[in-house]
Length: 577
Image (cartoon, one colour):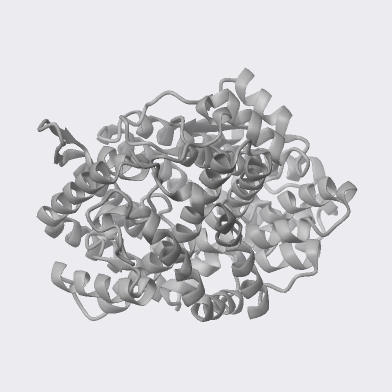
């Protein structure tokens, strides 16, 4: 990368006079972009090995600063290419197309119109704050006294993994309460960081003349009209969505000291049922990969070859590098035209679905690896769309292939858990983030005030379906600190948009001729990387996502686990001992 930058520094005053020279300059710019993303991918992989290694953050900053220092030379080369085209020194369709993409890129990312120095919050403020949050979180410990009297000390991430993957109500409650106590004790420190992060995002948004939400939507390539249509549909269907919680309450409360309660204890929210075991095929990674491949291959025939390529190239990593905290993520390695996939696999339904999701995300990234960097219109929503689509395909295959009513009930119960997360928890997190941004405009927010906002947003979303409040989710969840996506002020609504879009997309795919599905699937992958989000649906399905009707139908489709599980309620009752 340094060699490429050195070359650009020497060539910034070179005026190309023919197509060959112009295309060679474009190729150098493309390779620098690919090398930058590859080096950042290496930094992220190293962070997975050791989140407490501050040297990694420094190396990442060095890469970004190196690119920033070359920005004037890079911009000068682009201006020379623009000048050659305008003066018709060079007549080239390829150059014209590249320049059009550059113009469109600035429309998609309006902050690129500003000088580098004008918007340095990400490098100077947000980057160090994200590292501080991660290091602080990894340095504190939760203390859990287990039923046998032993005391288990762990990081919050390990305890959180236990909450997500433990079906035993007593253990889950112990870990949840320990987490809440830990973050309550340390809440002042996290409160300071949250105030700083929110302030930095508000500053950047105000410089662009936008609200934090509008800024986030621009990053996602999602029109505000589409978002408001979804929000309106969600508001009208919220009572119906809460029915999932009311339905689940008596089965979650079995084995507790409150079996007749109509509400779910906050510690058991979204819990699996301990007596429901998933399909035998999910007990191994190989079995899970086989099931996922069988589920998605009719829609994406190239997926089987992709999995084999990952295996042969050792791009699929399943060792527990995350110290028991769980996790599944992927990152493109552009210089190798590959995708590195990290899956901390565990033999349960929850982890198998996370594996399906991240493989969908990875397959999408791999499918566009030949697409020039400046033509890509990527965002969290785009990744979530394909990841959630893979989850839906996986869910429906497991239901269809279930070998017993008990197995089918286990799969559908996980489908219910996914509805609770994507259509209630995520909207709660979004509302809370919006309230924090709005309140932060007026000054510093205390722990007590953030807790007050938390209770308000919790009541708005959960109503009377849950007993208690997850009071310190704002401190526990890294999403509020945008650890995963430094550019955007939001890391929440993307999940819900992707979840609902995927459900509606699958419904549309099921309505077309089977022979047409692979072609449409291939088109969706490319369009997802290059078109505005609305156009993905208008082009491939003649669907209008700016209409409230689209999202109402999407919510109806997403609630299918609630409808499908009712004939199997007998399997949800715990066997009497």
